[in-house]
Image (tube, rainbow, N blue to C red):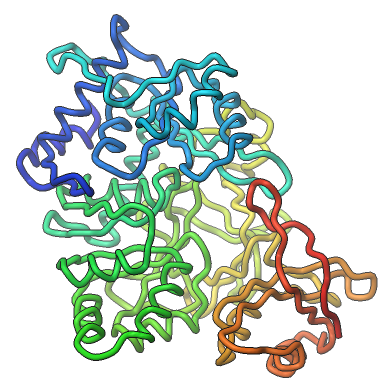
Length: 490
């Protein structure tokens, strides 16, 4: 039996999960997942790594289904609730899904796809098996989960993780962030993503802690829940912190005092999945007294770098390697040994994924001498790693200089009228690439305002007149930024 199931049985009557319906113990979770495994097996002895797709809202049922798939020997493929029909079609066809599971509403959404692709569709309510049925012995080396990553130039790839990979990802974080059985965390992240599945859900369940499943993020709902409960851990993405800061800045009196006290009382608050601008880190500290712990990870490797739980949480940095993680920076296949020198992040360790599903060449090309090539660029600054951005998107090559889009975003966010911004590079005959920015402002903001604010920073790169301002960043069907149309120019 896998360690996570052995632990769950030991936790027995402890509170495991709470969702909008009710509270559930670990014993409830063990029983429900075993019944689902039995129903999935039917007359089979082992699913033998069949891919089971499921479209389920964050809930007790979601966890029971994922664990049930694992107990039956299948590979779980969590599907995004916001995915379009074309995206779902790609996921189902690419992974060769043998069975789809959803709730009543999801079944309505998936019925046509199920018919068109000839994939059986099962309502979760019908998965009732015999809890006394013998279940297969699942070795850790077996494949456990496929999560689809977004590609900027191609269709999303299926990242295959084994049970061993998943256990390594969980145990590393439990060790580094000192998870313990009395922790209580609100879950507000999507569960088709590594951040939600591993960091916010699996870590607490591994250690016998409790998870309050709040569903999709709504700022009012989160504020209310934080005020009512004594959460000890909180993890979110920068966009959520943007929204919470905006909410807190509009609160007054006892209501503000209460939520500030609740946030301040938490032992750990984290941010990830995207870069957190130092300016946002600063605003959150001023409002709540909390230093956000920023970390770095991706679907293929789980979490790899983290600021320390006990120690300096440096804004704009992602700290040092987590337990069992090896890291180096490379340029032209050579390891960089100097600080303040950009290079691609390369990762080794037991948490690194097994393969890209059905893409042998892509998998092979993603490694160099055993190192996984993340495609992200960082530099070591005073002992901490600092992410400069995605090599293909966030590193802007202009006038012979490598410019971090993330650093420019932080400069723009310091402007008193700028609420959010996104910076990218666009092709230019003179400069190679020029810096383009999309800005959301709290009041009227002119192109001249942004230019004046940014020129000092940009002049450090000897490109004082290459800033363009965009009205919007168009996206393709997969939600990825595509080459924008320039609306305003110096």
